[in-house]
Image (cartoon, rainbow, N blue to C red; front, side):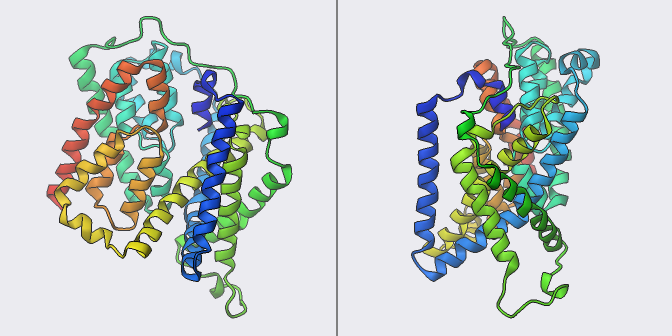
Length: 394
């Protein structure tokens, strides 16, 4: 998310817009707390969703982002010059950048297109291959499936981009005056708006045991099998709830102040703030997706898997259409439904190919016509691959 802010820093909301955003985010948390307290059963559902989101997703997202952003900081490079050198390899390079977990790689390639360094086919390859922040969720829960989708996305994105360049030429829809993406760092709302140092420290302190418990959970190792615990104690549950609640509080109250540049030259403190901010954003969406699913089942009694089975041929199409929505929130919801068994793999694959994540925002702002055409072009491979998988496996 901080990469997106760096690209569109001119459009950063003013004080009024920031207050509005903080107000609705805080209202969401109040409503969530009120819903949790309606009964002991709903309280337990909310607590388990919070804990699962933190221990099964948040801790792994934070670890992955630390690795990704650390590599960005260590290997600073001029992407424009590099793209000019690779020539025909631009398209597969764009697909690889897009398929990288998160939206940073895709946003970089979008800005290179608007500067005139990358072809339209490269833009198509990038947007076709990217799955955005939803990839972190899939990696945390089903790493084998995630790696398979990454490989498939690179191949499909590369073929799509090469076909588009062959059809239209490399300069198709290139901005006449290449838009200069913002290079200046995103600034905080003000020193007084920064999250208290104690909360930031607590966030990282909770992350250490949380990551250990998350890894144990991934390997089906129970804490009670290693450490004798008093009967009735649930340290995993309470640590997960504490970590998730803290992430939501920081997301609601101070996320804007923590937005920092994606530059390789950022300080270690900025790097930590960037990891925390982006992790909190993904955590918020994952928590809401988990709760929509769990509470929806609780209050409605509907079996979503059975309901989708009745409309199985239309489910991949619906997931592809959801992928046209900008941002990483909708794909995270689709991925959550897939992981809970409510959506088939074909729907997940179709959504992964059609969705553009946060990369669509700077594309729409800097080259709207190219962004819309590229998004529409991603529909064809999404339909072909999703329904191919549907017919073969499902």
